[in-house]
Length: 133
Image 1 (cartoon, one colour):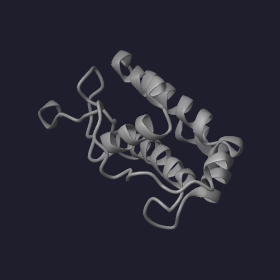
Image 2 (tube, one colour):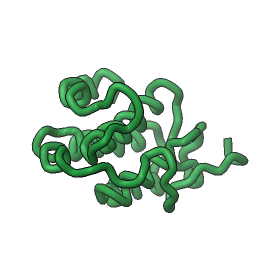
Image 3 (cartoon, one colour):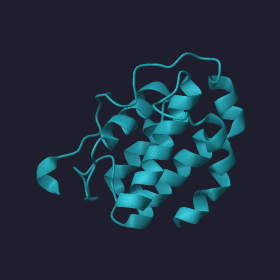
Image 4 (cartoon, helix red, strand yellow):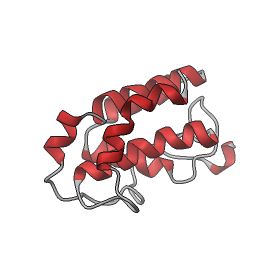
């Protein structure tokens, strides 16, 4: 899988991604959080949890994953980080997130719902250990 594989989601991301911040709807928050995880992996090699086998910078990515787990029930996909041994494994998680959450039907159900919490400061089970990098 490559960065270009995710081009198929460009139209939906453009439609729901706010100009800045996380937006005011659950749909815009979802698109922003998923897009951040994808972008930061392909641009910087960042992962949302480096306490298992994947290493890398995480910056604020854990918060995005924790938010997705809490507010759109993405934990069943995100929990696969526990089994990631290779970059391809991590990319498969990102692909599953994109397929499930970056589609018109799913986001249409969220577009009229007010934002929940903040994607930037959400605590949960995904974490980044500064000593691991």
